[in-house]
Amino acid sequence: MAQPLPTCHSIPHPGGTVRLVQLTDTHLCKAQGGKLLGMDTDHSLQAVIDLVQLERPDIDLLLGTGDLSDQGAMEAYRRLQEYFARLTAASCWLPGNHDDRANMELVADSPLRLCREIRLGCWQVVMLDSQVPGEVGGRLGPQELALLQAALGAAAGQGLYSLVCLHHQPVPIGCEWLDEQMVADAADFFAVLDRFPGVRGVLWGHVHQQVDRLHGNIQLMASPSTCVQFAPGSAGFKADALPPGYRWLDLHEDGSLHTGVSRVHGVSFTVDLDSGGYL
Ligand SMILES: [Fe+2]
Image (cartoon, rainbow, N blue to C red; front, side, top):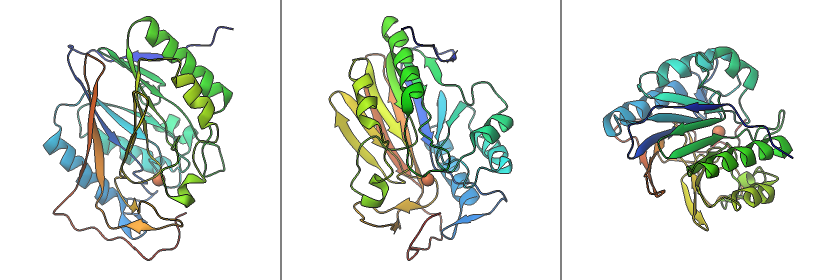
């Protein structure tokens, strides 16, 4: 049965390397200056954006991979849009468990903002929704998996390479409390990916820490939050003292992908490291 194709947006690109930046888990509160575990998430996001401006001034696309607000408030998405606009690149969002997709759509001032497929040069970026309303954990479900298959099939027909983005982790990352929340139908997700050799990367948020792994030829990547970090290898909830950061990705014409993480240094942040929980 033919699957519906997602709405696709093409961003004009002169050729050569496609340069992306991922900003994830910004957790902006309804009121400016609101805090998560003692950290002012507006302040930390702006410090990360300052760093991106310094280190990666020429990017083609900015990816916001969920938990962009802390409670789904429209005010948070409005400020996010203003902050992201400081970087002149187009930006695209997907929802996390803390987000309200309807409010994101109401605030979005561009059809690109919540689109599901973007094409630039030799690359396709697919934006999936792993949110299960009312739950912390993630699941894609038949509709998202069908969208993924249709998008990857269309890209394969045109010789494009693919980067697939979502909020929740599709593999266990070694934190027991977070791994209870991983994508419930991850086996079905990888079964789709494995049919398309042009898929070169899977990128997510949610875990507030850097992860770099391989699944065959596919790079699996998780990234620091722009606010509070979670401690790797923790059985229960544990915050980490590492500073806020972001991930950059260079997508080359030959299908290779280079990536790295950069963190803010020289700025003081407050974080409650003894907190036993995270709402
Ligand atoms: Fe988060």
